[in-house]
Image (cartoon, rainbow, N blue to C red; front, side, top):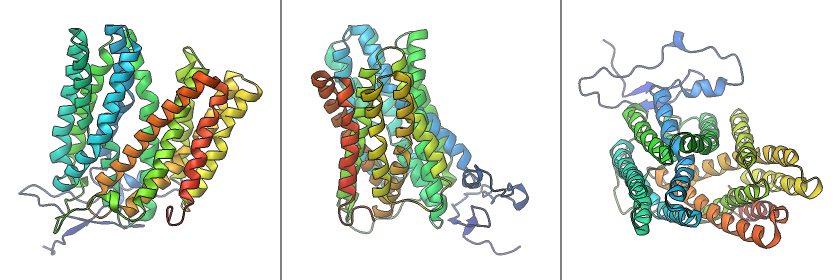
Length: 429
């Protein structure tokens, strides 16, 4: 019997990656993908993505991640519809969801730190269970028409939900740590998956709440969250190992250049938040959601295409393209005012967001200390959430005082600010 090495091959022979074997405890260890089972490299458009899933367990882990991430686009819409139907106040519904967003921004980095210290499976499952209990408590409070303060408390409890996108990216970074091209493709795939979830989530929530009953969207989101995280955590072969801590742990926030990069994410989030509010105000009615979804569709398509590009652009170049393309919706409403023209402008403008996000997340991975990837990427997501909140508030104020058409200048200004912040020395390298 040949001597068994402590590593196994987890990628195709063209770009091998050595992954440490896990203790099997008497079970049959996972074997590498047989050579005859690998698809031949025909140079097709999906070839880089097919290669990603040659790693044992990658398909199942990705499926679980997608199931758990779909509710990210459902919970806010579902909560607003449910609370507004039960209490007759959209102002109350907005205040409750805003409280949950603020709680998530505070709690998420600590949850991610626990994930880095103790492992994804050990922390993600109980953390998601607590978030699901918060969702169920919110449903019960609305159904029983409980005091208003209970709504805030229940929705704040959902802030313990782990950052599934960050954990998925951390797994890819571990599996393909010796292959920058594969990591780039993986980041592009995850960005496209994020856009798809945020595009389909609100549609699914609206259909469930309108077609069944107001609580249906929240209940479905809770089931998907728990099911997805269980499927994701079960694939232990793809989970990054916990890095032993030999001294005091410093937050990734103190890593060189990280604060400057988070400011870029903050400004980028303002692009998304302001564009959403202004577009919904301009395209009132049933078509508003479909028009806004085109921006996410453009980003999803661009993310998949960008994943095939071997030569990657710099962050300032991506943000410069975003700043330029974000002017298209403003020009569309200023010149024609036609909704189809605005829809086409949003589709094209959305194509700039995925490359910027992929490049930014890649930089976060480079700057984050080893063993703290989950916390580092969660900090980036937290900065995005803060930017989205600020952009929504600014866009709403401009819509109220200037009208929707002039307010389309807000996303372009936010993208320009992100570009200026990224061009500062040593921010984007």
